[in-house]
Length: 191
Image 1 (tube, rainbow, N blue to C red):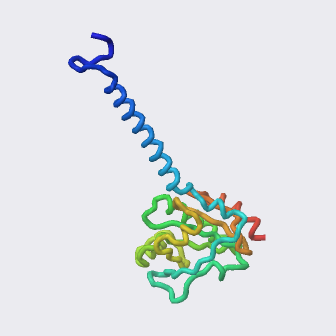
Image 2 (image 1 turned 180 degrees about the vertical axis):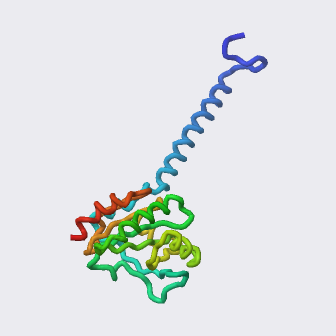
Image 3 (image 1 turned 120 degrees about the horizontal axis):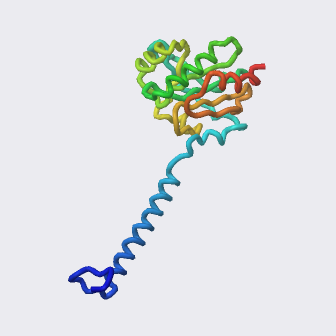
């Protein structure tokens, strides 16, 4: 019996060719799947493309003290003030620290407007309980379905977007960010 043969199976080359074709087909399929995943997966934080460009405008319903506010909150209404947009939601463990870091920055009396964006928007009572837990005493814009977050290119939470007085994006962060990092980035905009 020759090496590499199977007892009882006559080797006329067809079996080898079939096996090589199957391996080749599996390799081609793997390359196609990898390409599809790469094309359809968003960049970790596509919002970096906004740096130096005007921030996308939005107008959203907001919650405060468990009640929906009658008037929407808009980015355009904040013109003339530097704004820190903090995107997160209550079920995001990392968002808790991000909201707390932003809250520390907002507590300093320097004119930075912090908008805590609940994205995707949750029930007003849920976000109110979350805001109370964190000690946030500000209206919280509700981003239904994450539409505004998508316009900003946010693919991971928490995400932070720093906008200057003229409405231009000056900083973008994703994941946990310290209050000192946010303060240092915002300092030139507060002068």
